[in-house]
Amino acid sequence: MASPATTRTVRPLDTLRFEASGPPQITGLVADRLRLLGAQGEAAGQDGPASGQVVITGAGPRPVRATTGWGGPKSGLVDEATVQAATGVMAVHGRRDGGPRGLAVDYTATATAVLTVQGLLATLVGAARGIHPRQVTTSAERAGLLAVSQYLAAAGADEGEAADLAPGGPPFTSAEGTLFELETLDPGAWAAFWKALDAPADAMRAGWRPFQFRYATACAPFPAALHTVTRSHSTARIRQAAAFSGAQVCVLRTLAERAAEHDGAAPWSLRLTEPGARTGGPAPSGGRPLAGITVLEAGRRIQAPLAAHLLGLLGAEVIRIEPPGGDPLRGMPPACSGISARWLALNRGKRAVEIDIKSDADRRRLRDMAADADVFLHNWAPGKAGELGLDAQDLATVNPGLVYAYTGGWADRLPDAPMGTDFMVQARTGVGEAVRPEGEPPAPSLMTLLDVMGGLTGAEAVLAGLLLRERTGHGVRVDSSLLGAADTLTAPALRRAARGANPRRPAGFRHPLPTADGWIAPSDACAVAAAAHDLGELATPDALSLLARHGLTATAVTTDLADLHHDARFAGSISRDAHGAPAVPDPWSLS
Image 1 (cartoon, rainbow, N blue to C red):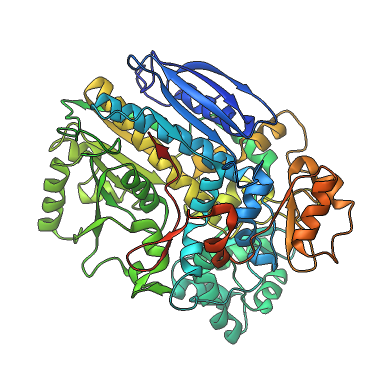
Image 2 (image 1 turned 90 degrees about the vertical axis):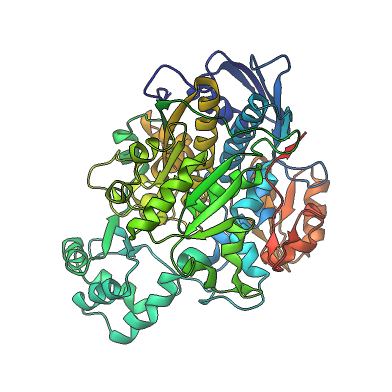
């Protein structure tokens, strides 16, 4: 168990107790994180129950409760496999391979556990401020929908994707058979890398667009010639080309390698700064637990914007700091009413203010805004905040009670770490091996697993910081990272590796089964028995009926995310926003 992350003995849940019961994949991780935050208690994990409860006592006359589990009573979702299948996670993750594919890690269960802790922390923050929801409900069903929300928004947009949705993508392979990821955000560096390896010019040009948009499409159908090129060069030569061009490569690490170097750190760190914290001003008489809290968000891409989005859903006012002319990602296709559908999935409801951080006057303006805020959240490149005079100690001079939050890539925990992007962190930490079962080549998922999990972790850390501020009267510095998200996601596999066991799941794990008109996914417990039945000539409803008659649980696999609007398993839960973009339900219900 990792040691507590705070640098002082005070933690946000010190003196509190909890009891947890229910699905161990969810409540076990909830219990782990509550202990890291200072609470004392136990989890009574129970295989079989679809839902469970977490109760925190000691924070007032009444306990705070969370109900959490796999899905609603009518959804038929009973475990990780069925939730991945129904919510579209299998469809998005499988785009690179041309068909739905299950993640061999418990992704939606992990996300649900983090969301459950978020809900409990938010409720405690609200209670300390006189806002009194005491019950929070989460589910893996909603966590799965949140995880695919950007892809769902794009599927319901007014126009087509920016790049083809077709099989293909990294990792690449060197002449020695070494698998590696390539990363650059610069088309010039992309071109220089391939030119240094004597790649065909037409393949180099054709490959940039799908590579550039792989974050958005979860696939990268670039020319096969690029794979052929890397197989003709040694790893050393490929590294030389990367160093020359400014691109970066990262050899895929194994789970055993990651387990051997793991430092046991918590997924976030919390450090008390200055005394004199204000506590969000007068709290509204009702409403969501963060009502009256102001969050300044200077985020890009996914990680920080998602963290701020979640804080907004809990009632905070989120003010988004954008460059002059606005965030260029607002125009990223596909669009709804002229605004990027993906951008809306992460940023709807935020108020935008344009700030030129290169300007002395605008930096002073941003510091003035921070003086009246409760949270400042960013994911700038490492060191940039300090260069701008906008680091935690700088803003503490104008607001000693600020919760200053940084969501980065590596948290300065790994020497010589590559660029801190989703796919590079997946490659470096063994996620590429964890997400695929035994017998399959490791490959980081092109679904943005860690950007989403990093956003969830970032919001959780901010909520812990807000509660710590309420309980101590100090400002708080909060740090979270994609590395912390990766270690959370792979924790069961890393534990297996640490004790010398095979960290990977068995061959064929979570492979959906084809039917005459689609796919079905059996629950993990029923997978072997279900695979013994010949379902290929049966329509999906008939295949499900056949398995049900044999006492086997399964669900249909969503293959087109646009179908989720009409899916009876999620009846009424998916809506459209003011721009017409699909919107998933809030991940918590509060009462």
